[in-house]
Amino acid sequence: MDLFDKIKWILGILIVFTLVITTNLVDKSNFSQMSEAVESIYEDRLVVKDLILKISEDIHQKEIAAIKADSSFYSKMNEQINKEIDGHLISYAQTKLTVKEAQFLNDFQKNLADLKVIEKNFIQSNYVKDGSLLNQFQVVKRDLKNLAEIQLREGSRQFEKSRRAMDTVDLFTQIEIYIMIFLAIVIQIVIIYSPKKER
Image 1 (tube, rainbow, N blue to C red):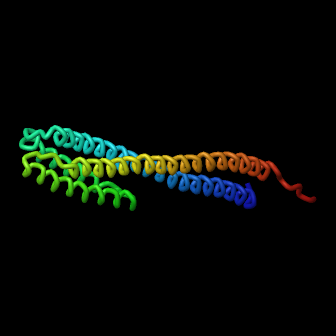
Image 2: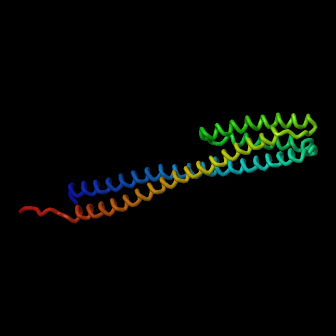
Image 3: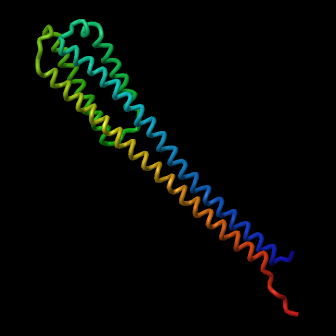
C-alpha cells in the first residue's frame, strides 16, 4: 500500500469519525432537552397540579364549614387545614414558576390571607353569616382555577418542546444514515479505483 492509498484510507476514516462525533453531540443535546422537558412536566406541572388539588379540597372543606357555620370545625380543624395549605404553598413556590404563574400564585396568597382575616371575623362574630366570607371563597377558588389552567398550558408547551427535540433527533438520524451510505460508496470508489499507470 503506497502513501496515496494510506492517505485515502485515513481521510475516509476521519470523515466517518467526524460525522459520528458530530451527530452524537447533536443527539446528546436533543436528548438533554427531552429529558429536561419530561422532568419539568413531572416536577413543575404534575406535582403542582396535585398540590392545587389538595389545596382545593382544603378550601372546599373550609367553605362547607362556613356555609354550615360549623363551630366544631373552626375550633378543631381550621388551623390544621391552614397549616396544610401553607405547607402546600411552600412546596409550590419551590417549583419552577412562569411569570404569569408567579403573579397568580401571589394573588392567591394575598386572597387567602384576606380569607383568613374574614374567617377570624366570622368566628369572633359567633358565626353570624356575612356575604363577604362566601364571596372571598369564590375569589380564592378562581385563583386556584387560574393556577390549574396554567399547569395544562405549560405541560403542553413542555411536551411540544420534547416532541420537537425528538423530531430533530429523527431528522439527524435519517441524515446520518444517508451520509453514511454516501460515504461508504465514495470510500469504495476511492479504494477500488486505481489510476492506470503509464508505462
